[in-house]
Image 1 (cartoon, helix red, strand yellow):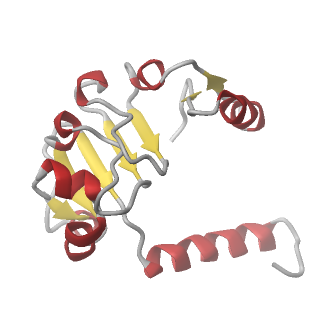
Image 2 (cartoon, one colour):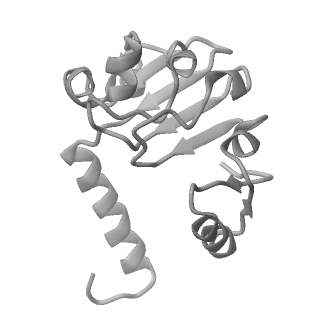
Length: 157
């Protein structure tokens, strides 16, 4: 998917600016500015307290929340977690995802259920994908890296 604009925010401004330079994005001064009006939001922090508020999310947006995967840490507030929540694993999320545990958020589906068509996201709803990370995701990512490296002519990865 092509994006017309990519905004990035970090609690460390220098990191946001460096990332923005390297990835043709725009560094902004607050999480709210980064999130407001966005169709897709990605969080990848080690935050112990929410940095993303549900009230900032555009209706119908999608959030990939891949950080703070400890039972007592969270990136998203309760309002954000009351949207349609999809997880990589219900069992793992119930034990490790503070965003889900602390908010008492119901889990609508596992990603595998969505991919296989067993469940479909409710049209027009805001969706949250909360990932705690599974080995199969790491293997899939590694496969993509190897394929990309081979495509670039690398002899070893």
